[in-house]
Image (cartoon, rainbow, N blue to C red):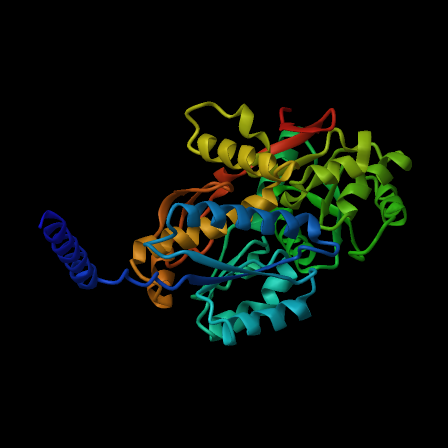
Length: 388
């Protein structure tokens, strides 16, 4: 009898369990990921920029997605390698917009590429967060186009301010024939007179140049007190070496495109004494503990170097800022509606990034001031804060 009752009871328990399990709601489907595109010069002559940018974005998104993504949705990061080619950047932009339907595009790495795709993103109403520095990217302003590096004009002003302190009034300017080089050349020419500086000689060289002794010999003949080089190519590592070879013994100023220790390594001892404006990532360890960027800069630098086994550079920082700004805007907008996110970027203020503290507005799609720069130098093969 007991056995029979136990059997009946067991059947009843199983039946109840089946009924209850049938009443459970099926798990909600995971929210679709947010598609974001990126165009970086991972290979080619501008890989000093694009490779750390791609690695930084991968690291950022990996960490973000582990924590649940943005507003409960993960980021699907579509990174494309342009090789630094404006033509390839155009093709990749169209593919990301038309086929992948991305919310935004991060990059490209260079100014020349960015200027080629600026109108495509604007017409396609796709947010562009450029990692290049040329002034023309945001001036004149396009409503869907933003950038994270500091402006050329701000870098030029920092250089001229330092020249005033040193009593330098006659300089030679050399620039590469790229979008970045042309943009810097234009700002230096425009701003030199108002800063009491004469450009005695102004030379342009091919971005593929591997020897600048001919150009620099002309500069030496002009009797200049300093040289300004404006480029992002490997030539940045060549100019200091060539100056030493021809005994052009005057201060060398580089642009804010110099923020990668590989350029210093390419010059060897000749790089010592080079002066340039840059963000504070390269000297993060020396910042006071109460500096608003200290925590972010040291955490990014430590995380990047531990993961990839190489020094962090300001270029990777530009990509960090781009994905940070985009995700902060998505949070602020509470949606992935393109216009809502675009509007949210314009209203972001006090966002601490690697390049500085960003304060965007409807009139400013860069969001950084002159105080985002620190004048740096090379001392014993390492970056250090410049002191007169």
